[in-house]
Image (cartoon, rainbow, N blue to C red; front, side, top):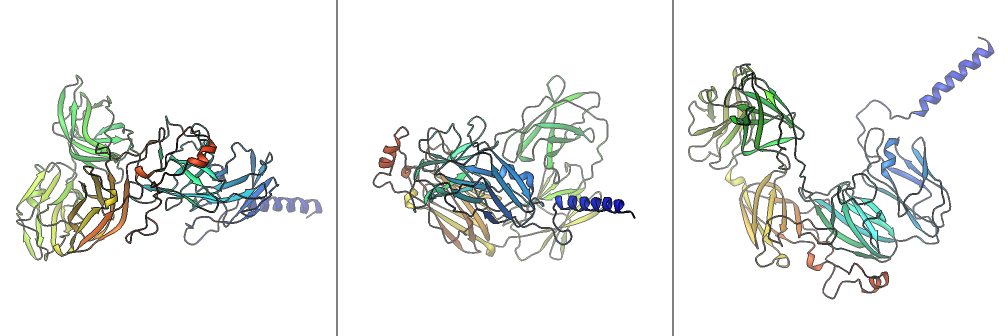
Length: 585
């Protein structure tokens, strides 16, 4: 090999290794990495004063997904600062193209949208605060956002913070997002008066667009920040109604009577749901029975027409009681479809055991099937095994379209084991279904009372109780107290709102003009034990009558001197945690 050839080979090898180093990856082998990335260092350090540099640096414990940095990085309270981003290994440098303003506390935030190479997102936002002056602001505001459907902390919710004077049409002075427990914190704030709102900031531009983005106020319209005294926004419960109606995207026929309906969203079949099939003149031709939503593709619903649909005719469809998971019915569709001459060869099979969590007393066991049961062999071949006794003609039972309901002769025997043998036409054998009887000894009750401070004469409290799987097990109203009986032992979530305006719906609050939400409370991990009555008291952490509401047109000097709550209007703050509420509530 000549010297020239050796040099060329050396350059090729060097270029190869450089290319290998330019694309950092995680080591292969072993279990997948699911841990969130962590910032292990910054330059300069958090809390630095008299900062005059033109760049900052973040060091991570992993190789990061560099494309995720753009949406995750924020600078507060300065808008429009131009910068360039340079990566090197596990570090990123942010170089500013213009000087930062003098004597200002600048906050750099990495949001939870930032992820590593394995798409693991940061667990909590990371904040680096610097000051270009002699001091750094130390004011702090804390709050909490809870999902009012589940009682759990709402992650990745954005809170806009405006400093007096407030202009909600401009960019928010500060933006923060909630962590995995729903907590939000603004740090390093200057003293003064602030206003915070939750915003569904879809385009991440820090400007609330009322036409396209939902927003809700906290129970307090304003909070005052003072050095060394953390201010509280309290807890905001969020449950925005999703009113987007699904669309019927496709209709397919497997036979002259069996339909497959595909929607734009996951669907569910409500009680009393029905489908009408219209001919080309818009007249009723027949009805179809909604059978079930597909387990694997919940946006697909199967239905069975009560009359064959001829292949030489076109039809349209109207439905009632088919909804998405938020209860929205589909838009009216003029989509046409053609009938079929194919015979229905659908095998009769059980699709779901609707009462697999157990039945009590005289409640029926309910089984869902793939087709209408009339004329099939399901009922004739049914066997019920109680312990070692086989019943070939069980009474009583009831058939409702594609549902089979088995009732006990009197009440289910708690000491017995029941096995339901249902014929599977495709397999050609009976399928054994074990059914659980909930014993009376395993049932308890829950007594709920409203704390005296939260009661108002003639005003109802709307209460919902969810089991540990999130299923609704009770809905009711009371002025002061009620008891829910026959609950299987386990853990429950209690949701309640005080219906101050009496319209039967929870008022979620209004940003502008400010109107506080109706009081709401969520209690998680309420325990119910068999043959015992549990007790809990509803205490609303924030009542609108106590909210601080200074005049919106006052000057800053007036706000500084006269914006405090009037005597007796104490800041409700956070309620003390209940014994049954864990720290992550």
